[in-house]
Every structure is written in structure tokens, then in C-alpha cells.
Length: 101
Image (cartoon, rainbow, N blue to C red; front, side):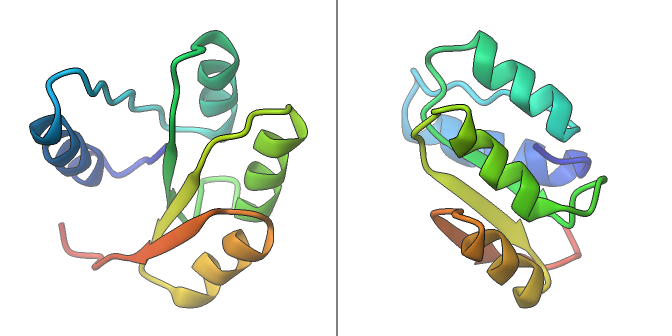
């Protein structure tokens, strides 16, 4: 989940080059991500950029697990404090990213 198209395209390119069966689905909002997770049984990981458009990364992470979805959730953030809040809410890990694509 990201409103950063350049980041999403870069992630898609990197992950798709690892395995031709890898499929990256890009959504822009927490609501769209939740809908995708419910609709697609084959999702194996969530990567999202932070801060999110709603500004509550922790609620997004908690909501995923509250739905009984047991998959890794990784946050990509330029701000370590934002990433730490997502990890405190249950995100599996985080990566620090530059603001410059």
C-alpha cells in the first residue's frame, strides 16, 4: 500500500525479478488494502509506505491481524519513529527509505 507510485514500481520490479511467479498488487489506501487482503487468498506479505494517508499506521497493522490474517507486514518509512510505531503495533519489520525515489 503506497501513494508513492515510484516506490511501488521499484518494489514491483525488484520482487518480480526474483521469481517469475511473484505478483505485486499496488493499492493506495488502507481501505483498498483491507479489501485486497480479504478478496485475495494468495497474499503472502504486505509492504506499505509510511506515513499513510490516514496517518494511523498502527491501526492499519492491528486491523490486519484482527481480521485473522497471519502474514508478514513490513513498513517502509523515511522516519524511524513512524516505522517504530508500526512495529510496536505488530508490523514484522521495517526498512528505512529515502524520500528521493
